Length: 257
Image 1 (cartoon, rainbow, N blue to C red):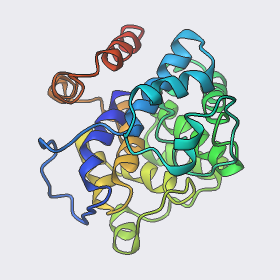
Image 2 (image 1 turned 135 degrees about the vertical axis):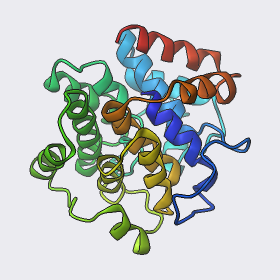
Image 3 (image 1 turned 180 degrees about the horizontal axis):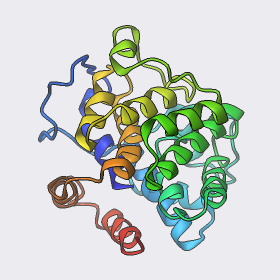
Image 4 (image 1 turned 90 degrees about the vertical axis):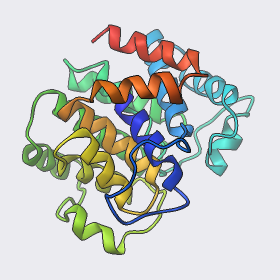
């Protein structure tokens, strides 16, 4: 899960200032956590404590306003009776990693958890599929499956086109917030990586929705490669220093691993 948060933080400064290179400073003083991290923490809290999904998501997001929430979601956060709004955006995939993390022994339960935290907003078939595909890829990586086998399962199960490499995607790729135009690319960035850092660099180098691509690729890459302890310490002690409640959820998650 913290892989998604790191990917979000590193990508935060490039969402509206895209770059098309892997050569950049990984952590900077300008980096910050966005809605991707807040929603990921909310999902973890929901699944750890069997809390009501919609209301818990609202509460976390209300506690952290101004974090870059999308238009429809920003309205949904404050609804008295929150209802799903048929979204097929990438907001489900970026937040869903705890579903795989907490259910590493059972794929069906991981996918059910993904559905539980996705359908509250992203109940369009493509939104649901994006959450499931990301969860499935993370789950397979936790099982030690190799990238070629993970790619085959995702293609077969979700009909995503994963034929292009990162270098082939990059030149013509542009900002897109849909699940169907973000999830396959984020998965590719992870599957093609040599390390956790390399996966996040791949994602940001596409020059698009950098924080969300970083969150998707980072979550999968964490399961594939692990994360350098220095990255985790920097994230917790610097970027989340004023978010103790978020740190508490992270620590509880990893205490159960």
